[in-house]
Amino acid sequence: MVTLQTAENALKTVYLGVVANQLNDNANPLLARIKKTSKDVWGKEIRKLAPFGINGGIGAGSETAALPIASENSYVQFVADLKNLYGKIEISDKAIRASANNIGAFVNLLSDEMEGLVKASSFNLGRMLYGDGSGVLATVNAHQNKTITCDKVNNLIEGMLVDIYNGATKANNYPVKIVYVDRVNKKFTYSSSETLVLNSGFKVYLQGSKGSEISGLGKIFDSSATSIYGVSKSDYPWLNPYVNSTQKEISDIVIQEAIDFLDMNVDSKINFITCSSQVRRVYQEYLGAYRRNIEIASLEGGYKTITHNGIPVVADRFVDDDTMYLLNTDDFVLHQLCDWKWLEGENGQILRQNPGYPTYSATLVKYAELICDKPCGQAKISGIKATVTNPFTTVVETTVEETA
Image 1 (cartoon, rainbow, N blue to C red):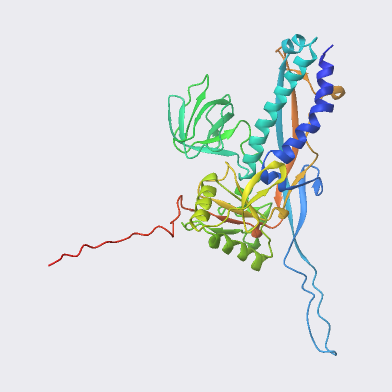
Image 2 (cartoon, rainbow, N blue to C red; image 1 turned 60 degrees about the horizontal axis):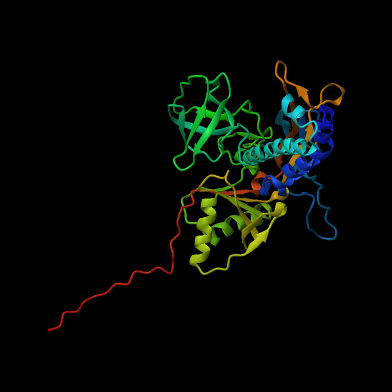
């Protein structure tokens, strides 16, 4: 017979390992390439020494001259707070009792809930990898009849609960639910029991997440930030990554220029390229225009993608339309206090009744933060045009000669 304890045991012993594996390895191609470790975690913080430059105790001289002066390796200490990541499922008491004598129905009940949790968590983890930690999903351009026009909608999806802020002031008392996203016209429609007054410039955030998300690529490439991981960029200019933001057509030369710069100047070996689907299509158009063979590579998690000189070029919905990132994923580490775990109450219980409601909820939790050991070893190319010039398209001019 299925009971609440049966559900607890299933969540702990059957589903936890599967869910953790899916979120770590299958949630996003970039996340699958990043190492996870509990090293350098001290209490609620990450404290790690990041080396830069080389050992200075090298020299050459005569057989009777003084030996080179020793000079130790150079380090800077990165300090960052662990971010709190949560995923919550809810099961009604009625549903549990209805499946009490039907193990198949019970399994389907839990499987559906866990599948929904994995889908939502994968979406938001992937999104955070490209964010700056602020949690901004979009900026409001206009608002009318519960429809918001914004600067971009790639971070939004139906069912998402969001908060809307005017600076530090929250515009809604209760989370707003997104019911439809118009991805062509960059609009979304929401449902809310409140009447909201929203103006241009307001920011949209995932519920309760403002300023609390993982520091992704947006943090590394934020030119307005004066520091990163508690270290001043003016004191350590090597923290600034390579950026090419002039408007341009994509080409192998543009990509290789960035790769060569990082290789020759900061000894960084690019092994992963990620871009928007628009940029990938433009790059494929470029390869086709120049009669190039398009090579396909298989990645962790079962993903397949095109390559640039053997380096995978992966399209990701969370990259801005005109942008491409060139990364050395060996420089990225997801530091975590522990892997995904269920939040436990008294006596190790993970399913707890919601006060005043005939429902039970369980919360998946992970405390982690993403650190890039060498920000200067990464590159961003933006301003990429949506089309390329076909070199094989020529204009044929004809003339008509008059005869006497």
